[in-house]
Length: 238
Image (cartoon, rainbow, N blue to C red; front, side, top):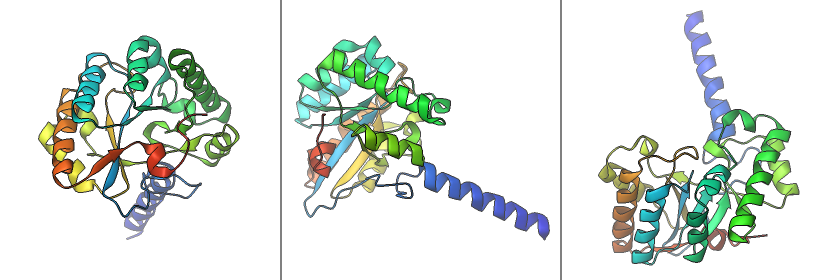
């Protein structure tokens, strides 16, 4: 009986750590919006971990064809590899946000390291696009009190969201991703997709197709699309 109780206690502790530090919904350490209050059927599509070569380019083509604005939380080192895509994101009318420099988990455990990650990414985005983001999404949505105090000092708005599908990063079928994304859609919602993989190039074909399917289905349901800053009524840039 005692080993069972110990196992339950350990599981409860692990769940509590995950919920407070990495759940999309937890507000334990500070305001971390995953949705806005909205009476209208409007939603924000967001994309993490890019830009990523041909796949971000294909995604931008779909968004342009569908006349859908989006918000891209980019990784600094990926911007360095694909500066033209970062420029195109802004030129196409989308919003670009900060998603760390190298997307390495250990760099978010100590304040000096994650501040360097944030500042380095701010600098390269500014140099590349002439925009200095006011929106920040931490890798894996991981946060701690020191991160929130740093973001406040840097005048950055932390942004959460709802993952379109828990296994989207593993490139399951586009149809499964899209079905889950549509089920998770809510008025005022923020949906998270990935056009890159931890700041690296990689095949995101299923995600790209899933985005097209998701947009088509949500449009049929009467949804309109907006960017995170407009949804939350906060600045996009500093």
